[in-house]
Amino acid sequence: MDKQFLDIQSKKLNFQKKILLKKMSELTKILDFGDSQDDNAQEVAETSNNLSLGRDLKLELKEIEKVLKRIGDGGYGKCDQCGGVIEKKRLELIPTAVNCANCQSKLKK
Ligand SMILES: [Zn+2]
Image 1 (cartoon, helix red, strand yellow):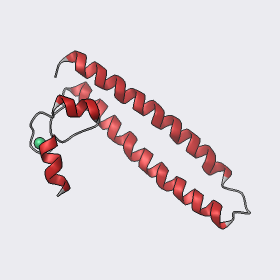
Image 2 (image 1 turned 60 degrees about the horizontal axis):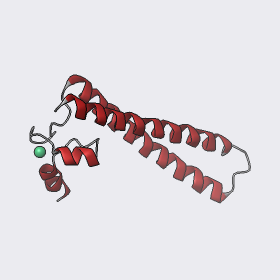
Image 3 (image 1 turned 30 degrees about the vertical axis):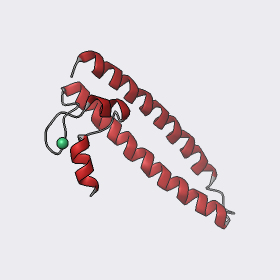
Image 4 (image 1 turned 180 degrees about the vertical axis):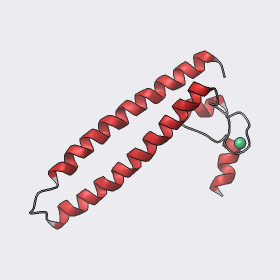
């Protein structure tokens, strides 16, 4: 992996992270408002939707942080499954990819 490529990827990831953190703080605000005593059914449903959205965001954030760490320690772009190199094109599309296209298609089956 050349350094220039890693720089671009880490910029992308940091940008994604920033957006995620913003979404999460907005979500926290919404959930705080939902604490009123007179919750109707719709509000409860919305709150549970937001809670699962919050879980998704947290998972995504974890993923990004894991990959950022890999960029730092030089393990970025290595496939978790076969140890091979992940295609550059794939990484450009999905900066958080940890499996090569080949292994990913096997995992889906
Ligand atoms: Zn692989």
